[in-house]
Length: 306
Image (tube, rainbow, N blue to C red; front, side, top):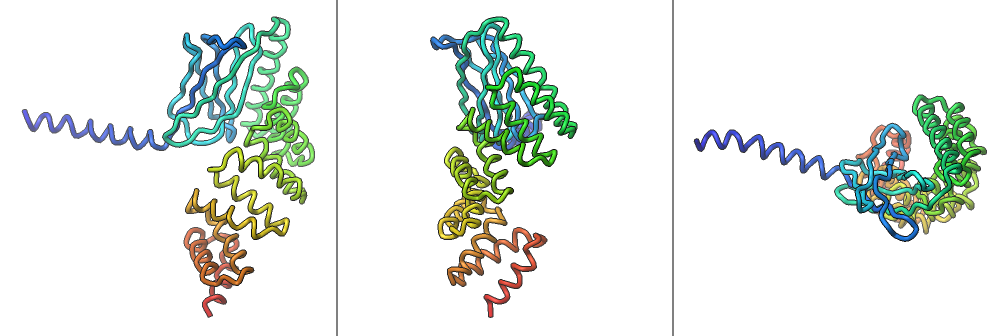
């Protein structure tokens, strides 16, 4: 009997261990949907879509208390959209972290039936745009997003996705205009601020990009990309002293962020801090031996060791 119990328990323990490991790589996203008076809205339709790829999405409904919860979500930024008959749809951006629960509460405002039909039509066109985007038909996707904007110009997500489609289509100036509008409508969107900063930086407008990179870093201070992007922007503005702590923060948040070590090394060299520069170059090469900057990094390291 004892041996039989042991045989049963071992797979169970292994299964539970695997479940725990899986849970520690995922996050949870929940919240409460209410009306203007704070009363809960039951059976509101909640859609959670990844800002990285529209193919990753979840659809759930609120309970009688207006609550919703989705588990097993990969870390990253998501757009949370909510709709319910008799109310105007609403959306906001939320960041999901590993082994944590992110709270995303939204308030829905009552709306007339005729207006709701127009907004519902805009959503359908927007979803069509997402499908086209996933199929890499970026010009067609942009046309759909533009059509959705015509029906509901106040939806920041429509403008943001339009910017993404235009960016993929190689229409940088138009993409920048769309991202700027998304930020105007939703100033607290990390993704919209980041994309606006990147578009400006690609156009060589680093002074303007700095404002959006700073906002992105403030909105998501524990995101290594936010710190790194701002640091590179400052480098291009000749503010290397201010950039250094940002790169140091980047590797603190993500110890294998190779590019940040390279940037640190170049700053240390300019400061004549040889030991620090050698250490940063060695870490860069250990992490990215095949990086395009690796040959130059080896030359610099050999010179510093003389």
